Amino acid sequence: MLVGSLRTVSLNRQLAEVAVELGTAEGLDVTVYGGLGELPFYNEDLDTADAPAGVWAHDETHKSFGIAGGRVVDAVTLSVPAGTLDGGHPREAAELVAGVREALQKLAEARAARLAEESVA
Image 1 (cartoon, rainbow, N blue to C red):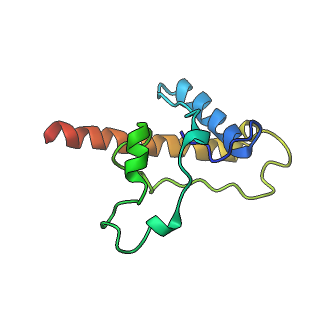
Image 2: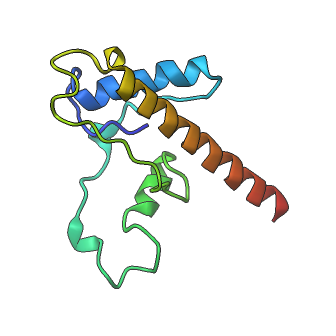
Protein backbone atom coordinates (compact mmCIF):
# COMPACT_ATOMS: atom_id res chain seq x y z
CA MET A 1 0.00 0.00 0.00
CA LEU A 2 1.05 3.55 -0.62
CA VAL A 3 0.21 5.80 2.30
CA GLY A 4 -0.56 9.29 1.08
CA SER A 5 1.03 11.04 4.04
CA LEU A 6 4.46 11.03 5.62
CA ARG A 7 3.08 11.77 9.12
CA THR A 8 3.46 8.77 11.41
CA VAL A 9 0.02 9.31 12.98
CA SER A 10 -1.87 10.24 9.82
CA LEU A 11 -5.33 8.82 9.18
CA ASN A 12 -4.00 7.27 5.97
CA ARG A 13 -1.29 5.43 7.90
CA GLN A 14 -3.81 4.26 10.51
CA LEU A 15 -6.07 2.93 7.73
CA ALA A 16 -3.08 1.15 6.21
CA GLU A 17 -2.38 -0.46 9.60
CA VAL A 18 -5.97 -1.72 9.70
CA ALA A 19 -5.58 -3.10 6.17
CA VAL A 20 -2.37 -4.92 7.14
CA GLU A 21 -4.04 -6.40 10.25
CA LEU A 22 -7.13 -7.53 8.32
CA GLY A 23 -5.11 -8.78 5.38
CA THR A 24 -2.86 -10.85 7.62
CA ALA A 25 -5.89 -12.33 9.40
CA GLU A 26 -7.43 -13.29 6.04
CA GLY A 27 -4.24 -14.74 4.57
CA LEU A 28 -3.46 -11.80 2.28
CA ASP A 29 0.00 -10.31 1.90
CA VAL A 30 -0.57 -6.61 2.61
CA THR A 31 2.44 -4.38 3.21
CA VAL A 32 2.90 -0.65 3.56
CA TYR A 33 5.49 0.83 1.22
CA GLY A 34 7.90 2.80 3.38
CA GLY A 35 9.59 4.94 0.74
CA LEU A 36 6.87 7.45 -0.12
CA GLY A 37 9.20 10.36 0.65
CA GLU A 38 11.56 9.10 -2.06
CA LEU A 39 8.95 9.02 -4.85
CA PRO A 40 8.79 11.89 -7.35
CA PHE A 41 6.01 14.39 -6.83
CA TYR A 42 2.87 14.08 -8.93
CA ASN A 43 2.91 16.52 -11.85
CA GLU A 44 -0.56 17.19 -13.28
CA ASP A 45 1.08 18.69 -16.38
CA LEU A 46 2.12 15.14 -17.34
CA ASP A 47 -1.38 13.73 -16.83
CA THR A 48 -2.89 15.18 -19.99
CA ALA A 49 -5.63 14.20 -22.42
CA ASP A 50 -3.01 13.28 -25.04
CA ALA A 51 -1.41 10.67 -22.74
CA PRO A 52 -1.88 7.14 -24.14
CA ALA A 53 -5.45 5.93 -23.60
CA GLY A 54 -5.99 4.23 -20.25
CA VAL A 55 -2.46 4.90 -19.03
CA TRP A 56 -1.86 7.00 -15.96
CA ALA A 57 0.99 9.43 -16.59
CA HIS A 58 3.05 8.09 -13.71
CA ASP A 59 2.48 4.40 -14.40
CA GLU A 60 6.10 3.99 -15.49
CA THR A 61 7.31 5.70 -12.32
CA HIS A 62 5.29 3.27 -10.20
CA LYS A 63 6.62 0.31 -12.15
CA SER A 64 10.18 1.56 -11.76
CA PHE A 65 9.77 1.47 -7.99
CA GLY A 66 8.09 -1.94 -8.18
CA ILE A 67 5.01 -0.73 -6.33
CA ALA A 68 1.79 -0.95 -8.30
CA GLY A 69 2.84 -3.07 -11.22
CA GLY A 70 1.54 -2.41 -14.70
CA ARG A 71 -2.05 -1.82 -13.63
CA VAL A 72 -3.72 0.43 -11.13
CA VAL A 73 -7.01 -0.86 -9.69
CA ASP A 74 -9.35 2.10 -9.69
CA ALA A 75 -12.60 0.22 -9.02
CA VAL A 76 -11.89 0.07 -5.29
CA THR A 77 -12.92 3.06 -3.21
CA LEU A 78 -13.17 3.74 0.50
CA SER A 79 -14.76 6.88 1.93
CA VAL A 80 -14.26 8.10 5.46
CA PRO A 81 -16.80 10.78 6.44
CA ALA A 82 -15.18 13.41 8.65
CA GLY A 83 -17.12 12.61 11.83
CA THR A 84 -16.82 8.83 11.55
CA LEU A 85 -13.84 8.39 13.84
CA ASP A 86 -14.55 10.98 16.51
CA GLY A 87 -10.85 11.09 17.42
CA GLY A 88 -10.44 7.30 17.69
CA HIS A 89 -8.29 4.90 15.69
CA PRO A 90 -9.94 3.56 12.53
CA ARG A 91 -9.84 -0.02 13.90
CA GLU A 92 -12.43 1.11 16.49
CA ALA A 93 -15.03 1.99 13.80
CA ALA A 94 -16.79 -1.24 12.79
CA GLU A 95 -18.29 0.21 9.61
CA LEU A 96 -14.92 1.51 8.47
CA VAL A 97 -13.22 -1.82 9.25
CA ALA A 98 -15.91 -3.55 7.16
CA GLY A 99 -15.16 -1.13 4.31
CA VAL A 100 -11.44 -1.86 4.50
CA ARG A 101 -12.18 -5.60 4.52
CA GLU A 102 -14.38 -5.21 1.43
CA ALA A 103 -11.69 -3.18 -0.36
CA LEU A 104 -9.10 -5.87 0.41
CA GLN A 105 -11.42 -8.56 -0.94
CA LYS A 106 -11.90 -6.60 -4.18
CA LEU A 107 -8.15 -6.15 -4.53
CA ALA A 108 -7.57 -9.86 -3.93
CA GLU A 109 -10.20 -10.68 -6.57
CA ALA A 110 -8.60 -8.26 -9.06
CA ARG A 111 -5.19 -9.82 -8.43
CA ALA A 112 -6.57 -13.35 -8.91
CA ALA A 113 -8.24 -12.29 -12.16
CA ARG A 114 -5.00 -10.73 -13.39
CA LEU A 115 -3.01 -13.84 -12.53
CA ALA A 116 -5.59 -15.98 -14.34
CA GLU A 117 -5.30 -13.75 -17.43
CA GLU A 118 -1.52 -13.98 -17.36
CA SER A 119 -1.56 -17.77 -17.04
CA VAL A 120 -3.78 -18.05 -20.15
CA ALA A 121 -1.53 -15.75 -22.20
